[in-house]
Image 1 (cartoon, one colour):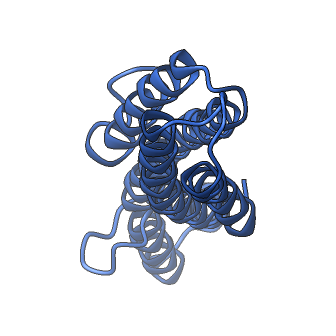
Image 2: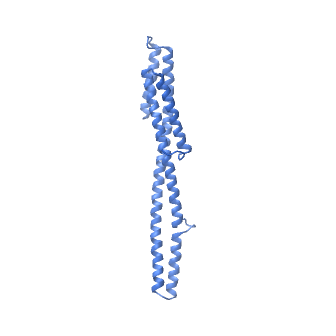
Image 3: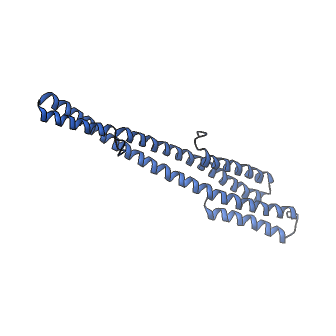
Length: 204
């Protein structure tokens, strides 16, 4: 539900309340006028919460996409390091077996030292082991943000439906619809709070 749609719903509820206040008849009463005004306030609160939840969902989605790209880049770098590590070790082994002498031994030691740095380099943080740890951490961030995004989506959907029910309550005069809308609003808020505080608590 877009902001202008929520605004129109609020305006409709307020219009019904204003109309009932100024025009008497069997279908209008002070109770009905007061009820419509209360529903208009409820719609305003729900619309505000919806905007906040949708902003949270958008932020979580962007975080998830960014973390996924970062993880893919790290795994690509890891694969490149693995290829270099394997190639260099194989070359060192072959040189050691085929070319005797001090010069060859020195080159073999050099290549193996470089291969070892490709495997693990805590100082630079770009050895295979370090890259693997970073990639897994980025994947964890991605999954955490993605779980939050799904919860925000469910929360936003519940709030959208609650606003629609409020609008229907104004038109039909059925107070049960407004009560149901309030209940769905609470459900939507609960989903949003989970998205902020504990995205991985439940899996949907």
